[in-house]
Image 1 (tube, rainbow, N blue to C red):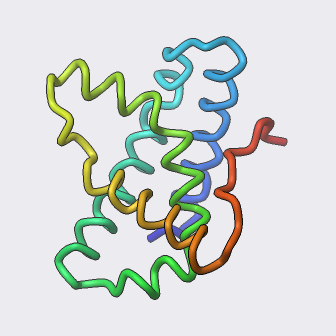
Image 2: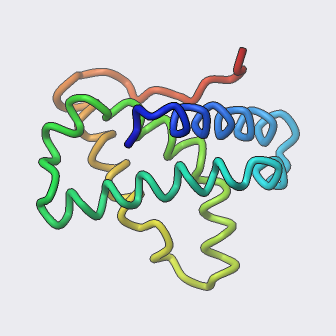
Length: 123
């Protein structure tokens, strides 16, 4: 799921949207890439739900993808916060947020690294 060409391209677009958001502090930077943003959100929410339902081992997933989870959460968080406000619900993408917290804990406690930051410029 995360390794497909379309998933990789969607993440590339997400990071471009995040870069533009940070440059201008303009949340509308995400709207240009809304399809890609939605795909990345959906992928991680689905994976997080599968982990919660014990369909996918969390430790195995985090061992391989902890850094990607953190990077994507940090890149998506501003747009998710806005969407939660619009919906009047903090439950929107809560599974993904929980998974990001688990990934940050894994990075700190197991890998013993600082949590990564999303790239500032996409080349």
